[in-house]
Length: 409
Figure (tube, rainbow, N blue to C red):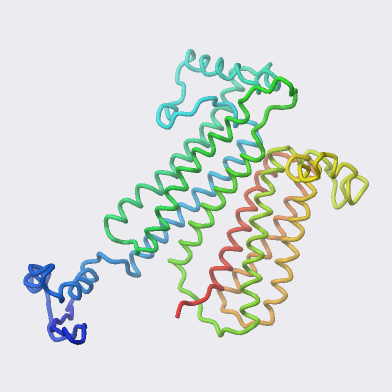
């Protein structure tokens, strides 16, 4: 392939013009060597560097952006898997089965009868066994242990999926300056997420002499753990879509600007609804008032504000937590429906229309799953599907936002 280059000194104008053909790699190296030998001495070196790096593939281009975008898409999928697996671990009450945390040491599971018995004896020293599982057998313990072990190992795999390719791409020069900051933030957030997970587990291992309630992790720490995972997922997915999907060109009208703001607000509402689900899970709030649309015989239950001060009910009263989650879910699907109706008056590109249609379809499916989970007293498979649906709904909202993003001038 012929590569067209030229170099002509333009000290007064600060630019290059094309005047010469270079055919092979050896010829190209010989051609640029006199300029590169004058590094630091000639003002033309900085002008030579850009075309040279573009030729040798040392700067991001469309091909490298696709590779980086696919990598981030895979990473976001792995984060979604970690969230789903964590939800199943919580639903099967397996999260407190591993009472230690070691980054490398715990990667090897027990392999002999003696090792399993030693692990089981450690578990027996903590409140969950003493209060809830005092008649548990070793075989039953192995099940919940492997559930938590799978979640932790998946988390480590997520960390490696972020960090190792990031180092490779960085060394290859495939990141722009802005992307370097994003990647550093994502990798740092993965490490923070692991530490936050252990901080959450510790809250369920603490002795509480004055309490005879079922041992569980702090709903605040659970919400922080889930919330940080959702932030990591959203940031990864958004970056991937921005690299993989070319921005749509729109005629900037008032209606389009309104729709864009509407999409941002709706995505925020969906995120908040998913986060409120952590409080529902942390307090087992799905096991109270298993009726819909009313809660029992009333629209507003009597014990909605049973705790004092009133603000405490929002985060610690199972009735209030379930009530809030219902309101947020209904508000989300109402907002999505209104946005869909409003968008019908705006000529949108096919891809944006597809994102909007997918969003409203997943929204109604998610509401159906939520109501079914509640009415059937939270069966594990259905509850896990409902939790997965929250990620699907959030993904559709992010996709729509990405399609409607403003094209840089």
